Image (cartoon, rainbow, N blue to C red; front, top):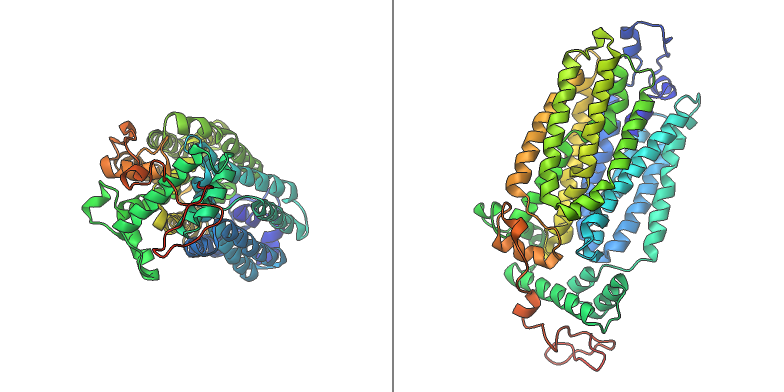
Length: 517
């Protein structure tokens, strides 16, 4: 929504003092009626900078106060930022407001993935976490609808209304979380086994005494104890350094923490380097630069609609085909579509040609590119990040991965105005920028093929075992053959030492009465 707001005539006039030229003016004059590239860069990227720091901080906060309360806190911080943005009459306060809003988004984006991954059943976890990306696409579409409706207002409502609408969603999310249960895996991490049993019973819809709850809770506890025995957490610093435990070779094979962290960080980096946010951040400006489009806001609305309508396809294919498979094929599809856009843009689609058919073809392949992303890299990158980390480092691992996403999001926000800008000193790449995105998608393709494991159909604890025993290219064929609970002696009649009235014995264990879970 940032660059759509910055393309509004009222905003350009009020923030720069420039007078809107008549539509009949020459292109050079029309090109000058824009918010300067440095201001575009600042207001777009500053939110991502705030989100970067928010995501890193969120890992600690989520382990201290819980997943739910961390997300609720993020909603509160986000609302503070929105108040500043709504009150802004220029770039300085808008930038500060977007930074605070970014801090809140960092909390929310990192911990929602963590929370959903920890409470979702393994058979539908991919589809449910993909719902996170689907909600993002709905938000993008609604934002573009509101901007489209207010773009021609001659007062501050043109930008204040779209910004103020964001309050509603933050409030809905925060209120909804008050009635949802905490993650049972968070309670296991904190040693609150009775609360873990109750939470797991709640999210699974099964009685605490059921064998289903007993087995799953036993596996969660056993896996947590195993991970702590392998990589102990003795201090606050070690809790962070443990994310990078392991040798250089283990990055390519094995279940070392450094392998998981590298995969998570690079996967989120690659998602951003597909160039998708160039379209959503700077699409309005880019479509305007093509010269033949009368209403670039409408085209941005169309691309947002394509994004939203195609994302639900991922709900099915991510569980049917798997995470790794759709990442590979999605990257291949984006490579093809982006190079086609670039080729058309430097030939028949040149601005000087005024070729409406060529521009229409470019927009069509941009929409195909969006559809490829929306059904593959959009949701799958988040799903994998939520699945690959063990419980002791999961909140920090997901936080680091999410921070990587927003770091590269910020970099793209900073440099893109200069890459496609038409002012003196800008690169003015135009459609040639799609050659850059297509080339980066080749790297994403290779990364998915050589580094990303298949996690489809596995519990979070089974993912740990799979990483120990396979390579990414053989991971799809791995089948569970043992449990951590069985290996650590928690299977059988004494599975989980939890009861409704906990009492510590001299040895520090929990006595089990007739209400054993």
